[in-house]
Image 1: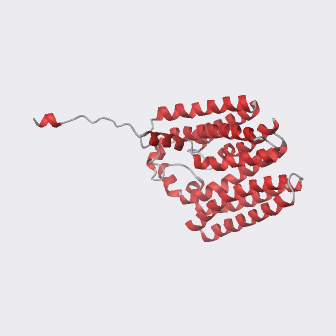
Image 2 (image 1 turned 60 degrees about the vertical axis):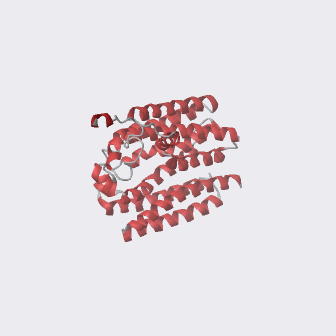
Image 3 (image 1 turned 120 degrees about the vertical axis):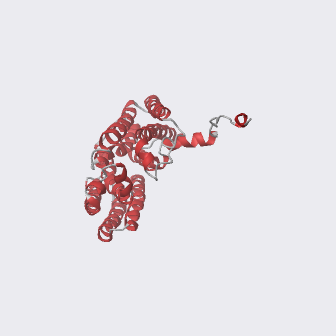
Length: 299
């Protein structure tokens, strides 16, 4: 009789809202917000795009970056499972299978390429595809687990959105667009290294050779200072060459000065509060800097 009470457990399907939320999470939407902002602002610096063109470019960019994010979730599921910060993500938690995540990643990129090619232009589609490939293969597969320079070289993927935005409006990539690419490229290391100082122990536990794990926190803070100085200089070059005017120059100089102060303070104090403050400021820094570009171009 006791045996009659034994029932086999059956998997209960997850609520639709949870499933949708998990698939959105795979696209790393919080990371995408800043990338899409650089796309939109670049488009208004490059010309006078229609709302429809901006919308479809943003959609294509979101799908491409989302595909790269989903690929990263799939590939890093083993180390994500070992870190408290990421163990609850959809793939390591088992809510989404690795196979489904990988198919989703490529489906998003295919959709991105098709939409951008059909509704924008081939160059924008190809640039978005290159960003996907760089993030997925160069950063995630090749560099992330092998080199402390992972975020320096791999960060080029995050600098592609301004190129996509420029190409969407003009059909080309002018030297001006390369300035914007370079600004995001050199912004990425001090931004991410500030975060890596906060996550050092978790990265060390799973064997990811981030800068503070391999070269120590002191060297990481020194590199943040050096890259912040270089970034500030780089942001003022467009003014020297006449690409932007006084409005941008004042805002860029002010932002750069504040970033430098925070970087030196982080080096001097060497505490978590300073690292967090520097990281959060870096997010606002890039957003305000690109907004200043639009303001300068429109006035």
